[in-house]
Length: 178
Image (cartoon, rainbow, N blue to C red; front, side, top):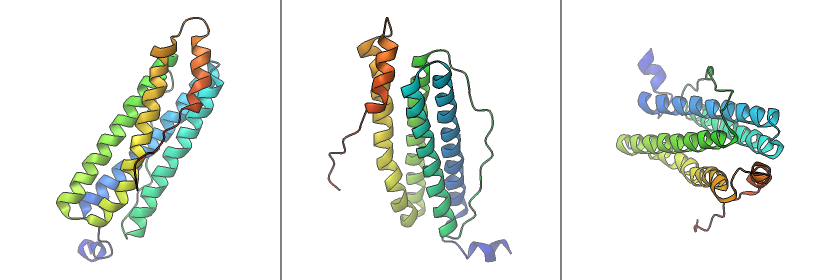
């Protein structure tokens, strides 16, 4: 019966598994950003709270995009179980350090998936992943620039307030040709 069901999808078991793993990673990222938003809100960083809420929404959209792809390809998309999300952070700066680490981990995960797709000659999934790989350029850029504000502005006096105000204004300019 398992072989018969496998005929319904062009996804190999390995590719379906890594896609479902990524669905879980995106759900965890969404939950983490929501926790960061809550922490910022509780600590008076209103602009950053809004920024992280928006990031949470984006990660959930990424999760749903992956979920739909697996389903559309005849695979079994798995709704992830999320637990153990960090809700407390040492400092305002540590929130942004965690965000950058998370984005780097997501980029690495997409790179590993793309590599597996190439090795499996799954060019349909490889092509689908291109959107995410391009998106990660922006995600890492913004996270890195937000963290750099701590070095440029400093945290003394009104520094944290200035950083908080500037975070939502960071934009990535895509100058690459499509």
